Length: 369
Image (cartoon, rainbow, N blue to C red; front, side):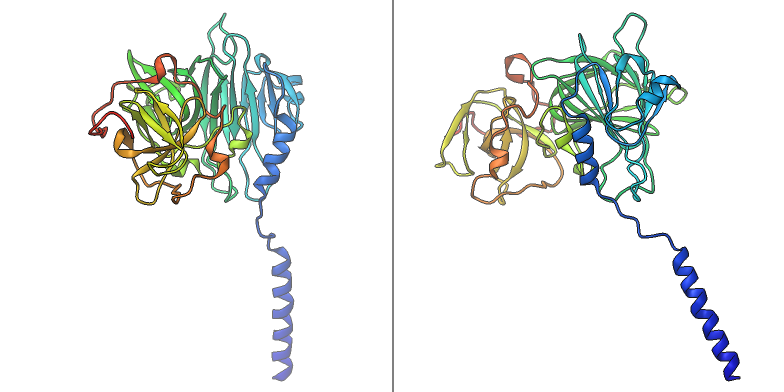
């Protein structure tokens, strides 16, 4: 009996060790290393080219063009590529999809592909490549926990706008927009600047900190099924782990919504009416919100010029939503946030003013002390 027990125990031990050897190692991913490698390979590369910053993408036409874009750091003229799909940001690090599509000439804008993103050039004849594109972003289950949402980041050049078409939606891009697709809609999320979206003769203005969604056609998912939605404050969760350091244009991620001056308002160095005066901002300026003080009475804002500071909330028209991620104390915001001269896009001529909409909150007076 004892021999039988010992034999059984020995078999159990051996079986346990064999099972342990067959178990896959725990999944690990180092997104910082991925972003560093991509940055070293593709940041500051020339316009008019696609640069691969990660795993080999799927590319059409198949052959010399697709083979040339396989290595990290590879450059291929953007007009030579009809289709590109970057790989998922896998949890085990086996694939890391990152690529830049940099247009030039009349368009002069940049697309940053992060994760599982598919792009097809749908530009009409005689139009520059990537004037019109078909976009699909895919949600994968086995992705790195510190990876961002698979997304396409669109950026115009400083001081200029680009008219492009995404899934049949005509967009005047003037700043930075994050674009994500879902089975029934395409989402446009403004990280900086002021943009417009047009379908079926209906145009919507999109400010930084806002989102507009467009329903996809039930038969052709790359065509709009309806007019653009009204703009609404972005969901902060979509910005989680977004690697802004990879953007061609520096951006400080906004809070949901925006604020607007209704009269001349003082921009101060800290949330106190006696704090140092940075400048006086005229009426009609639309600003992104970077945070607020614990009481929620002052907002840390960024102007179109990139200047940042504090404004008293009761003197601003507010179109905000959701909980604020960044809450600062009575001291000034961190130095990195105080001034970013080139962070964000211009809001167009005339200071970027616009008529407030229903739901905006209005101040009692028009001037700050």
